[in-house]
Length: 588
Image 1 (cartoon, rainbow, N blue to C red):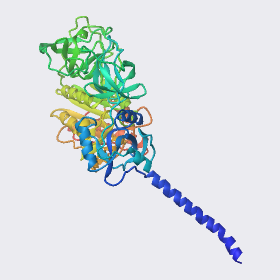
Image 2 (image 1 turned 135 degrees about the vertical axis):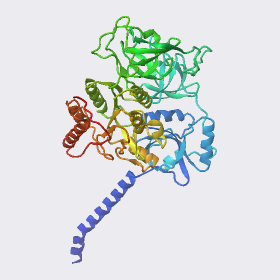
Image 3 (image 1 turned 60 degrees about the horizontal axis):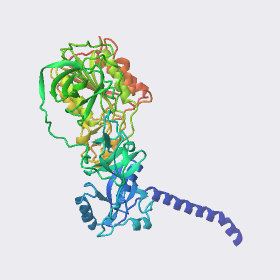
Image 4 (image 1 turned 180 degrees about the vertical axis):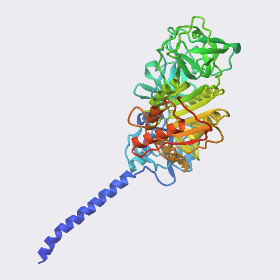
């Protein structure tokens, strides 16, 4: 009988053992999934930089490894990669960090982190990688009184191989690629120190301490390179006050962009000041009409027919047959003559269009797709291009900005503001990422990072600023926002800034006392779809109805709402708030 009971109980014991094993395995998996690399106690990792790309972080860490043999790169739970010099106990760590910052060895915004966000080490100068372990902590500890190891002589190089007929400078950028922001322009023979590499790009430092990334094709190695007194050691040269006085041209003289065949480009750069070191804000094609306002040396201050102002080199300002060639560059609008207009004569007598006649319709269209620090949006550029074509057919003067940085957006909006001073109708359309905070809406340029609490003030543009300029007595204003898409940047910002006031979608703005209509692609606080076709659901419906004759705008928006609601199976319903005191028809 005892043997029978024992035999019968064996399957039960096996099942119980399997359950225990599964429970232990599940516990291990949960523990691993939520693992962090925390040295414990009052200790933390000295973080000197963070990068969104592992290769960029490792290249940067390799440069620090010459002095800090414990340098380690961790992947964080937010997807970024932290470059750390090692871990250290406090308060000794704070005094050590202050000493390194004061001597310029590490950036001033370096800080200690307890490692709670760190998941595992992806690279280390110690050779130790992986999740938290005693071996990793032992190899990466910074002891009290630690001093940086003597720096081995890094590879020396200089700028070489530039085409003197072209730009004749090498761009220094914030990351390894042309999509990253340009921070300096380096002349031929500028001496460099090579800190690391990522593919075809080199992490380099100039003699003045500024560092960044440069394309390796134009960097020549020079292990024993010592610049001669004639070799420039700082690039770009410091901006100094112009030695040539600015001379006004009164009255303004009309002209056009002339022959560009010997310039090396198919466009003429419009810049913020008189000189190539100033920021480029637009690219002008041959035949573009201009009005010359002032001269400073070889440079002319000009105004375009859309109201945008800037400086261009006088060599290329002349009457010439217009050309349709030219390439669009992300971040700056390309402006050219209307394809249907007649070519200017050899001595053109062009009208001054700096002021607009009564009844003029002016539109500002911005479409941001190529975001640098989050997933790009496929459709905003298509939405902007489609609406631009429709509005031109409807008699609007259109100012178009595609894939615009913060600087480019500010310049484009200022041109719009100047252009609508005497306009009867002003329309603003924006497609791209946006966010709401404290009940205010902010448009997000393509170069925004939103990494700390100050980012909203310095990296975005408040929608209310644009609306305030539009909302003027006697003017009918229309603002259409296709910008309520799901936004990873605002989600990350809400986590980093710990701000509960950052909400989904956009907040409902008040139309105010002006003659204005404001429309959103979806209801306030909701998220809109980017769309699976060439356009978003909202813009697709807008393009369908906007050119319909004798259709009043509020009736048109109701039809747009019905189409969007149907095409999205009820998941998206456009919204608008109107304070219009008269009817408006895009087409009668």
